[in-house]
Structure formats: structure tokens, C-alpha cells
Amino acid sequence: MGGSFRLTRLFGIDVEINISWLLVFALFSFTLAREYFPAIITGFTAATYWSMGIITTILIFVSVLLHELAHSLMAIREGIPIKKITLFIFGGVAQMEKEPHLPAVEFKIALVGPATSLVLALLFFLLFRLFPPGLAISQVIFFLARLNLIMGLINLIPAFPLDGGRVLRAGLWHYFKSMLRATRIAVRIGSIFAFLIIGLGFLYLFQVSLIWGLWYIFLGWLLYQSGQASYAQLVFHQTFKGIAVRQIMSGNVQSVPPHLTLDQLVEYFYRYKYGAFPVADNHRLLGMITFNQLRDVETGRWPHTTAEEIMTGKAELVIVSPDREAVEIMMRMAAGNIGRVLVVENERLVGILSRTDIMKLISMHMLLGTEK
Ligand SMILES: [Zn+2]
Image (cartoon, rainbow, N blue to C red; front, side):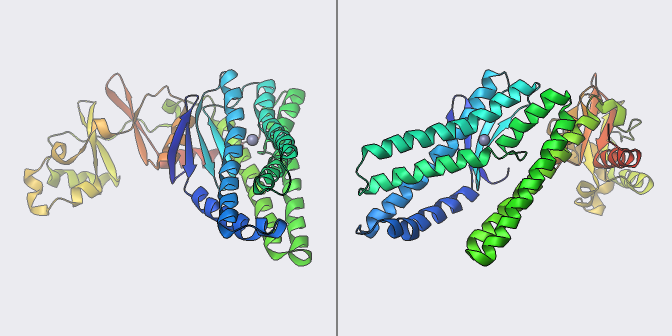
């Protein structure tokens, strides 16, 4: 996710905060200090209410972090590396390097998060009982007990991709022996919950409060969208699983020799109408030259400038082996907004994989049907 910065490193996992969280921090502190706490307990100074608001917000953050950390540590224990944890507007995401390969593994990883929140709720409740209720700190603790309880319960809603939905999918997966089928059912059940939340939002909109109504509608819609997106991503993975780059790349690449002058090079652009050409010396890849690089050189200098002089060197290009999984490369291209990768085998340029190749492949699969 864009716009994140690294906060710390715990158990070998980078903890990042999305900038959206800073806005949430300000909004939560403000709402708690000015609206929530003054409404439930009176007689404190503004400074005390602000301290309560800020401390509570920090501890909300710690609660979310502990929930994600529980998922991450369980994943690591099950042999799934965790790249990083990103905390953003509605909680956090622990980025797993790969999906769990067994239903039992997914079950454990999904369940440990809400379980942690529920244990935290219990601990805060017990702590609350130790303090007299009239203290500012007691109200902070009580709020956190409730928050962790709600966080644990919401995450247990069986709506994929929420934790509860993952627990449900693990069960269905174990039963049907098909991850795709289990996901499809879990996403459908999740959509029902999403629509129920949206319906509740509309009810709130007219009956209770406008703001809460809009929040519910927004959260329901977000839940629906993320369910659909995770299913689409899974279908995409399953469809193209096992396909190597070699099978979908364009072979017979038209390359240009390094000593070609730019006035000769422009002929290639006219003739082939490609946006870029690899520069190769007898099939040995040296770099890549784009139309924009050619255009940036004054036409008067074209006869005295060679392709080699203005090309992007090999070191800066994305180069892959033809035996790599295509879907992996496709994901990397999409994430990094990379237009084309060069396929090289034993130092020789053997192909090029462009966005156009991928789009063709996807539309072919869509015409033939992807349902397995
Ligand atoms: Zn979770």
C-alpha cells in the first residue's frame, strides 16, 4: 500500500504505518477528548481530557498491533514468512509471503487474531475492576476493554476476508477439499453479511444518527468490495498457476544493434510501431531504448549518436528467466507499474513479456471461460 512509513521492527517483521492512520489518530484523539470522555465523566480539566484521548488512541494502536502480531507470529510458526505489518485506517494487515497451503494452517492463523483481542478485552476488564471507577484512567481502561471486545467479535463475523470468514473458509476447504470452491462460498456468505451491515446503516441513517448510518454503509460496502477483490485475485492465481513466462511471452524479439545511429533507429519505430526496442549485440542483451529517449535528442544530433549512448543499461531493466511462474511476474508488473519485462536465458535475449501479452492472455481465458 502506498504512503506508508516504517515505525519499528518486531520479531524480524517491519511495522509500517500508513499515512491515513495519522488522520485517524487526530480524529480519534479529538472525538475522545472533546465528545466521548466529557459525556461519560465530568469534572476534569481540558488537559486531562486530552491526555485521556491521546493515551486511549495510542493504546488502540497497540491493541491493533498485538492482533496483527498474533497472526504474524502464528504464520511464522507455521512456516509462512511475514514481510511486514501495515497499520492503516481500519486496523492492520500482516503481509504474508504466500497463502496457507493447508486448511488447518489457515484456521490457526485466522483464529489467533480475534482470540488475542478477546484476551486483551478480558485483561482490560480485570484491570478496570482494580481501579475506582471515578478515576480518569479507569475510563480509559474500560474503553479499551470494550474496544478489544468489539474488535474480537467483529473479526469473528464469518465474512471473507475478515478473520471469521477465513476460519469459515478453512472449514469449508477441509470439507470440500477445494480452496477455490470454499472461497467462493465464504465470499457469498460474506456478501450477505456486507448487505446486512449496509441495510443496518440505512436504518440507522433515518432512525438513530446520520454519522453512524453512513459509517455502517461505508464499512458494509468496504467488506463487500474486499470479498470480491480477494476472490478475483484467487481465481486469477488459480487460472494462471503453473504457466511459465516462456509460454506467454512474445518470442522472436526485434532488437536493435548497439552501434545503430538514431536516424537509422527512427526507421525501426516507423516500421514496427513498438514503443521500445531491446538493444542487443548478437542476441546478447545490452539495454533498452524507448521512443521517448529518442525524442529527447535533437534531430541534428541523430546521425552522430548511437543507440548504445542513450539507452537504459541492462542493470536498470527488469529481467526474468523464461522458467519463472508467469503469475508471479504479472503481479510484480502490476504492483510496480512495469510496462514490460525482458526474458533472458543464458545471457541471451529470448523474449519480451508486455502488458499487451498479459491482456491478450486474460481476454482469451475470459472468452474460453475460467471456471474449473
Ligand atoms: Zn485479524
